[in-house]
Length: 222
Ligand SMILES: C[S@@+](CC[C@H](N)C(=O)[O-])C[C@H]1O[C@@H](n2cnc3c(N)ncnc32)[C@H](O)[C@@H]1O
Image (cartoon, rainbow, N blue to C red; front, side, top):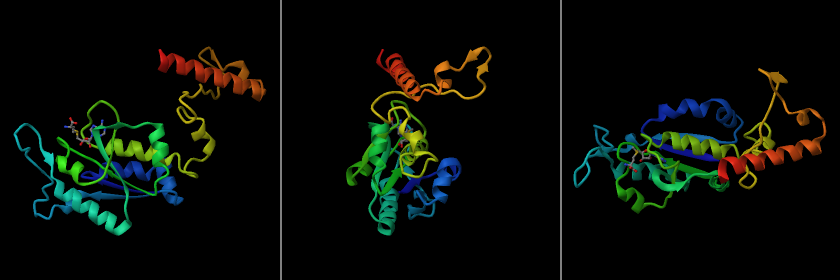
């Protein structure tokens, strides 16, 4: 899986991509990234990526030219990508979408800033427009990282044990994950449920499924 991230703030996301699970996944060759600063595609000596909105109003709007040129260069060099426009207007991201994206070969994520994009960025190119939810962030970098991490976890080999992705919430149907316990057995008077220490795996599976159903009912269906 190859990710191209178009951003005005590559340094803000590089450290996260190079560390922990994503860093290891890169080292093992499961995923690759390139960070493209589309400010380099302005073609003017002031590197101006934004301008005032026609019709007036506060804030600045991202010009279409540098974005189109950056995408043309990236796709000319690496081939067509599945293009994701990060925007509060898009469909809300979820695990089902992550699974769909995990089947793609190359993904491009365009991170907005300021008031967002000139509308012709949407009109002139084909996009999968995705939102993280009904709230406003200052830029698309955190949504891009969120999508990259959720998708990468589903790529075979990225997680130490593939089973741990399979049992996560939402992974099989819409059930939430069951509670987990580790040592100590007794923490401030709160004990690990006996069934988990019984060694009876049929009973443990039954308990876990009941907990998943109970939590989903409590947290999602009420
Ligand atoms: C300050 S926001 C622009 C908000 C825009 N004026 C609006 O009201 O929809 C700047 C950029 O952050 C990103 N962004 C902000 N909130 C987001 C969200 N909930 N999901 C995805 N991207 C988001 C988008 O790339 C957006 O272009």
